[in-house]
Amino acid sequence: MSIFGAMMTTLSSFGQTFLLALYVPFLIEEFKITNSLISSFYGIATIASALMLPKLGKFIDTVPLKKFTLMTTAVFLVSLVFFSFSWKWWHIPLAFFGLRLAGQGLFSHIAITSMSRYFMENRGKAISVASLGHPLGQAVLPAITLLVIAQIGWRESLWVNAALVGIIVTFFVIFAIKPAHLQPESILENQEEVKKTSQKIDKVRQRDILKSRPFWLLAPNVFFIPFAITGLFFYQFGIVEFKEWGVELVAFGLTAFAIASAFSILTAGPLIDKYSAKTFFPFYLIPFLVALLIIWLVKGPMGMFGYMIFMGLSVGFGNATIAALQVEFFGQKYIGTVRSLFTSMMVLSSAVGPALFGVILDAGLGFNVVFMISIGLLVLIILLSLRAIPTYSRAKWKYKYRKKFKKR
Image (cartoon, rainbow, N blue to C red; front, side):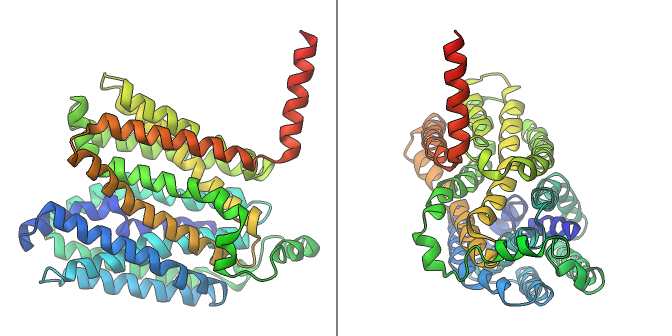
């Protein structure tokens, strides 16, 4: 099942910003539209898909996983093919909507929800393996996609994307996923624990989740990383020009980001399984804070690598931590309903980041203000996250501190 999760997150790349951005120059040239207009199309489509996710994502709790995956894949394929045949400007936002909804939203939602539901003792490791698909896609697919576009054209490359998604997902779902894979990991080992976990919340509605304390504890963290990452990546060439670095550093920096993210994901899983996600919740954003300080204050080009590496460490560990925390707070039984809300928030925040940073830059305030605002928000979120630390852990730390102080 963990391989299924990694496959789904990797293929979600065909609906992610870093890959769809490769098609923007071709769309601008062929449809004779401006940068601001296509950015508006993309933002509107992303927001619309974010609003749809809670309505559709919750069905993963009631619809069999195989059926739900194949239905989502069908939407993804139709969107890719429709995109390839688009000939009027209004086709572009419709295609973006389908790709963002099925690709970025539901494919990632299926992957992490499945890991959260069918794994218990090894949940952290399973989520980590599934999350590896994101850095894998970032490291490999842009170069392959550009090569395919150069050889056969941008429209034809979308047919290749659709063929890959359709063949791989259909084959895996039909032939590789067996009924035994769709049972919770511990169902034969510990029936009482499974029952206890699944009944942690007997019945949950999305409006009840929105009113709960755990939701508002997680919400700022869930919102920040997609908000900041998408905004910073959207303007990565502008940042390089602002710092007076070479444009070639962007490619090397993204590779460093992907490697650091993968390393962090693999490290996070065993630690979460051993100590619980709550223990790490307030601290995984600290490397991101270091990354923002580096890009703001460091003048030399080596700052790009420090910036990308620390950001990758934070993003990788954060993805695993947030996913595991949702189960720790809300239980497994309705994790699809819970995750659909948080996934919707992530998609929405990925639209807000570029828009807000664009307003700041258009106002002539510059990247220094972008960095300072991001740092201020992040410090506030880290402080708020301290509320998630278990009471017994805080008591233990206080005890150790007082004992050490008395010895002095």
